[in-house]
Length: 175
Image (cartoon, rainbow, N blue to C red; front, top):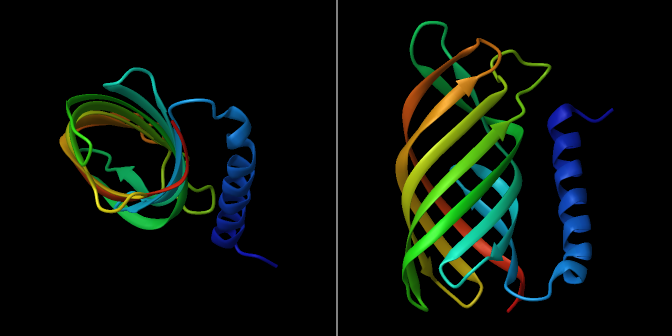
């Protein structure tokens, strides 16, 4: 019998395969599908360019779990916890090889039913970021900011410092 993380990995890769198969039908202009690896875990994302400087990106992935303590503080534990997030970016420096942006992000971590140390969490944040093109398809994305984390299992939230480093590989791009 398969364990929970293996089932979740299987479902993530099945979803990625399905997303990759249907995305050419959705792609007409300014669409990119990525596979990402970073401090937030492994994920797939779909980026749509609204205007030259404004982009929206939706993510599905597996990564660390979170838990707010009863009084103050929080813990982050690395495991394969499913999450979904969305990102809205405004590029204030938009050059071919590098971009600087202001972004807002909402991330929902689904927690883990079999382990109480991973709670259902909603993280909303504002950040400033940098995207650097390494190759034609590979990007390095870094960001730093602040946000609010809400733990639905302990009914508490708090403000936190956020940062991220992500390698993004474009598996499909339509411009």
